[in-house]
Structures are given as C-alpha cells and as structure tokens.
Image (cartoon, rainbow, N blue to C red; front, side, top):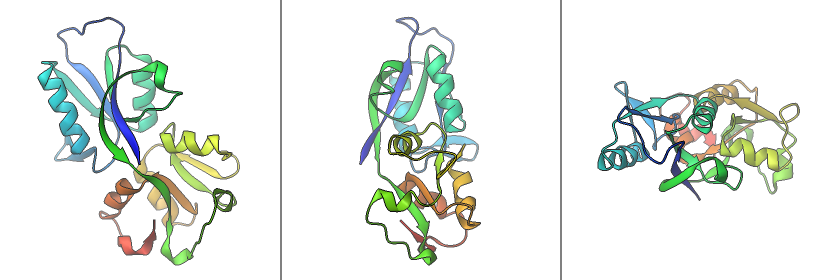
Length: 193
C-alpha cells in the first residue's frame, strides 16, 4: 500500500479571496464524477479541509498529466490524490494523506498468466497513465514506451486496450480498476488482478 496525498504549490504565503483551483483525476473510489459533481472518499476529505480553512474553491477533474503539469507550474493550486515520491517532493507543499492505494498488474483471466517476477512482464506491453506514479515506477524498472509501455491519459482508456488485445497488462491502482470494471462488460470475474 502507498499513501496518496493532498498537495499545494505556493507562490505567496497567503491565498487570495478568489476561488482556489483544485485539480484531480478520475480515480475511483477516491475521486469520481456523479451527477456532474466531483465526489469520492478523497474528495470529501479535501472539501472538508478547504471549508475548514474558509477557502473558496473549484475542483476540476482532468486527465492526470494535465492536472500534474498545471499544479506543478501554477502557484496557489492544489492537487489530489498524488503519490508522495522523492522526485515530486520539491514541487509541492504536502498537506495530508487522503488515502492508500495498492498498485498491481491486471490481465484478462482468460490469458491464464502466471508471473513470478517483474522480468516476466517486460516481454509484453503494459498500459499506464501518463506521468502517474505507475508510469514513473515502471520506467524506473526498465520499461520503455517504444518497447513494452503504452502510455495513455486516463484509467478509462486502459480497459478497452486490454479488451481489444492491444496490451497484455494494465498497471494501476487495483481498487480503482475494480471499481471502473463494475461499469463495463465483461464482468470483473473475467479479470485477473
């Protein structure tokens, strides 16, 4: 399990009265869109923190790479849920933990795949979300986009690639993928997590 956080970039030591921009991605059950409203377990925590601080805010759900790049380069913005890594440490002011994730490889159960070590997976293509923790982690372990890494913008883009046989694995937060699978066919029993 890895902790995910709420982080902030600051230019000034105080925030102005205008709405604070908060960015996130679709990552159920932490962040999801219901009735055109961003909700989820992490979202509830973030809203409570901002309301307790009496900061007016606006939450935008966008693809992860866009959220990450905007907040990294725009002062006085928030991002959640973000993995706290040594590489990301200098870019943000880390506020609090909003949950824990468990990343893993997902494949179709019909493939009957048995993996004993990471090297076994490197012979096939794995999809990850651009600039996400999973993307960074696999690159650190020798995966490359021109060989065995398929980089997409969102979790929702990964699943059809697997169903169509364009990739062999998804590497992502397991509970988020399980939640997303509830919404599509085939049923989750067809998947191997």
